[in-house]
Amino acid sequence: MEKRKSRRIPVSIKVRYRREGVFDKKISEAFAENMGEGGMLLMFVEEPVAIGNVLELEFITFRQPNPINAKARIVWVKELKANKTYEAGVTFTEIREKDLSLIRQWLQAVDIDRLLSIAVRNQASDVHLVVGRPPTMRVFGDLRPITPQELTAEDVRSMVYGMLSSEQRERFERDLELDVSYCNDVGRFRLNVHQEKGQIGASMRYIPTDIPTLEQLHLPSILEELAKKPTGLVLVTGPNGSGKSTTLAAMIEIINNTRKCVVMSLEEPIEYLFRPKKSIIEQREIGIDAHSFQSALKYIVRQDIDVLFIGEIRDLNSISVALSAAETGHLVLTTLHTMDAVSSINRIVDAFPANQQQQIRMQLAETLRGVVCQVLLPRADKQGRIVATEVLIVTPAVANMIRKGKTEEIKGVIETGSRLGMHTMEQSLEELYTKGLVSRESILSYTTNPAKYL
Image (cartoon, rainbow, N blue to C red; front, side, top):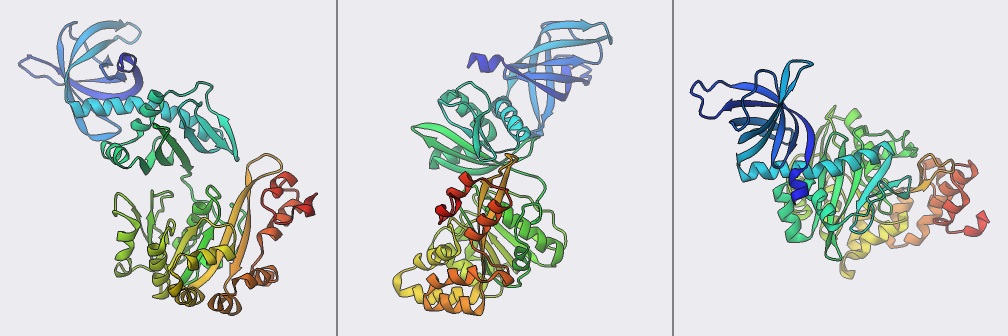
């Protein structure tokens, strides 16, 4: 604690001050150039007061709009002859506990902000903090240490708690799990805090400010047609970290640019931030704007929306509401953690009791517009990753297969449906490999026919 307490961080803050006990109560201004839990370094623009005098201070930090008031004693003074000003070190003698806590949090956040800055400069997608390991970033799918030093439990706790508000700390300590967003000068991050072997761990995903287009993401153009559907259900599926949220953000931006409608998103936490253009876009974060997906979805049909984006349909209740919203004239965009179109359909049906499954097949046949499955593969030139996809467009024939429970026949329709924009994951992988965009080693992890690439 002593090391943390004596530590200073660079700042540039305007500080208003006056000497305690002076009758004219003249208010002067200075700049703080660094700050610690115990005091700060002030750069005076006029004659300083003497060592030992107590100053009444007022200043504002970037983390809180309300001013912090404190008293501090001058412990040393130095004249800067080059510009005829003075600097002085002051030690806090009176400060409110909540303001001291804010400064402490600021100090803690400096370490993580430095690591995140390095990660973003190296085009990392994720950063991991684990006790006993160096801080680690994922760059184009590969894990790399950011610094060589292993993190202690106190290191991780300090950095993580430096990113959280007091309310978020309480939620984590109660639930031992927390999904929130974190913003700093580098950008926005999706932050997951958890416990591992009794210690705090964290994973952070970088969320770019600019929403990429389908073309920039190398996604099939048929996704634009799916985004422009007036009603129905569109699924984007794939393993964790496959870019599903980015794909959906690109599709929502198409709607934003082309339709006058109301878009509602339910996310945990909010990732991409949208700037309304032709559309009204409301983004609700679970835990802040709603208690749960279930409570938010309960009233969604009463909010005069046209498009509903659900971060993920996780259970029977959220699947039911998504299907109902699609059935009642809304376009619903959402994600599943499945690897192909057929398993996505089966996952939804199997989530329900056996006596309801035929009804769900009927609803899916009527509402499902398309399924996009995706994985990210390392590029052969080592310059990032590229997406491989499977696309199912629900035609009357596909809808009939869903209705009759003959989903095993859908694969054949996808294989022969190229004129409608359909293709299988296998066909996408083969195309990427033939063009030299991915290596044989990358293909082998996902292909159902590895002998083809030997």
